Amino acid sequence: MISLLIRVYTSFVPPTPEKKSDAVRLGILGTAQTAPLSLVLPAKSHPEVVLQAVAARDRTRAEAFAKKHGIPDVRDTYQG
Image 1 (tube, rainbow, N blue to C red):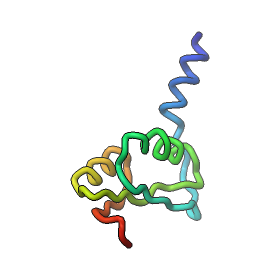
Image 2 (image 1 turned 90 degrees about the horizontal axis):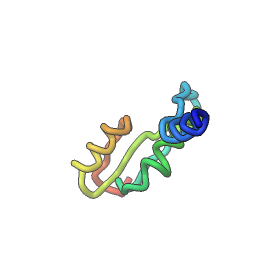
Image 3 (image 1 turned 45 degrees about the vertical axis):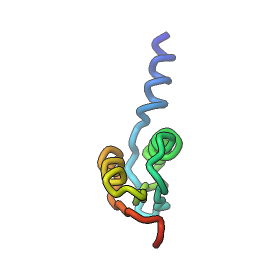
């Protein structure tokens, strides 16, 4: 039973390895509720992936999302 609890816990709170200097840098388009489980948590557990930016039409939502998940760059447009 303890091992099950540990597996469940580590699936939602994965260990955070040191990121590699040549890691792939990704940006998230939109702050949908699926983004943390589908992108943020998996990226945190891989040393080869860095979440660099988040973009949303509402800058306030993008800033809140970035602050919550430790994403350094915020954009209020999907255009380059």
